[in-house]
Length: 207
Ligand code: B4P
Image (cartoon, helix red, strand yellow):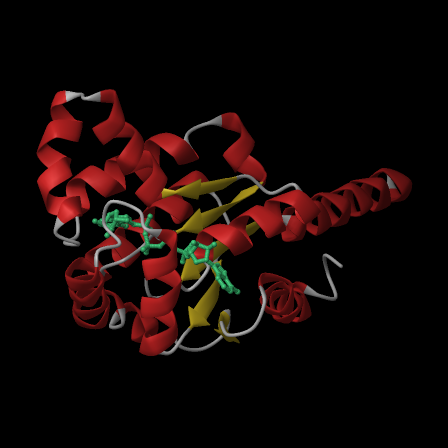
C-alpha cells in the first residue's frame, strides 16, 4: 500500500515537473521591435510553436476572403483589427494539438480586452500563466528599421500611426502584466544580442 502511494506521488511529481516545462511566451513591443525575428529564434532553439496575429491577418488579406477584404483597409492605415476577429484566430490556433505544450504569441494581445480574453482562454485550456517578453525600442530605431523593410504598411505616415496606436492601445496592457512573469528586453543591437537577453530570461530552466 505504502509503495503504491509513493509510486503515485512520484508519478504526480513527474507530471507536474513536465507541466512546468510548458510555457506561454508573449512577445509584446512596438512595430519593428523584432518580435517576429525573436519568435523564430525561440522556436528554432526550443521547438515551441509560434503564432503571429499579424501574419495570420495578412494571410487572410492575401487569400482574398471576405474577412480579408474587410481587414485590408484597417491594416493599411496601421489601425488595429477588432478584438473579436483576433481573439477568434488565437482561440482557433490554441485549439490545435501542438499548442498543448505551450506557444509563443507574437503581436497578441495588443489591447486590454485581448489580454483579459487570453487570461480566460489559457485558464480554460489548462495552460500556464504567461511569461511576457516586452521588447522595447526607441522611436527613431523603429522608423529606420521599418522604412528599410518596406512592407505595404511600412510607409512613413503609417509607421507614425502604428506607433501612436501602440502607445494608445497596447502600452496599457503592460500594467495588466506588471509583476511576476514580466520582463523588459532591450531591443537595440543585433538580433543575436537581443536573443541573448531573452535567453537570460528563459534560463536556467530551458537553456
Ligand atoms: P504585425 O505583423 O504584428 O506588425 P508589427 O507590430 O509592425 O511587427 P512586425 O512583426 O512587423 O515587426 P517586428 O517587431 O517583428 O501587425 C501588423 C498589423 O496587423 C497591425 O498593424 C494590425 O493592424 C494587425 N494586428 C496584428 N496583431 C493584432 C492584434 N493582436 N490585434 C489587432 N490587430 C492586430 O520587426 C520586424 C523588422 O525589424 C524586420 O524587418 C526585421 O528584419 C527587423 N529587425 C528585427 N530585429 C532587428 C534587430 N535587432 N536589428 C535590426 N533590425 C531588426
